[in-house]
Image (cartoon, rainbow, N blue to C red; front, side, top):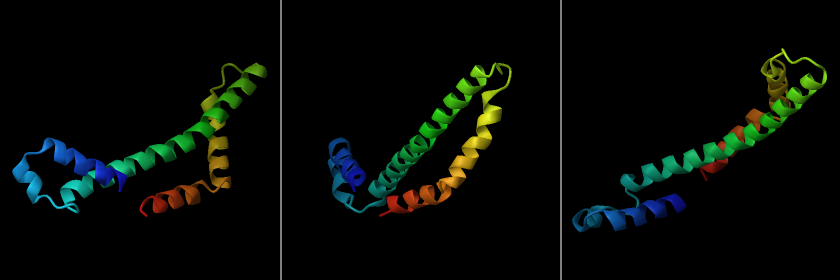
Length: 105
C-alpha cells in the first residue's frame, strides 16, 4: 500500500494532466511497479537476514583455521557445510517461505 501511494503521488507530479485523469487508482500502471518494488524490498530484507549469520560463520571459521595454523586451507571449504547445516537445522526454508507468503498480505 505504501509503494502504491508512492507511485500514485509520482504520477501526479510527473505525468501530463490529460493522462493523469485517465489513470485509475487501481490501474496496473501503478500496481505492477508497486508490487515489484515491495517484493524487491522484501527480498533484500530476507537476503540480509540470511547473509549476516553466514558472515559470522565465515569469520569464526577463518579465525579457528588461523589459530590452528591452517592458513593454506580455504575457509569456504570448511564453512559451506556448516552454513548449509545451520540453515537446514534452523528451518531456513520454512522461515524464508513463511516470510515470502506474509509479504503478500
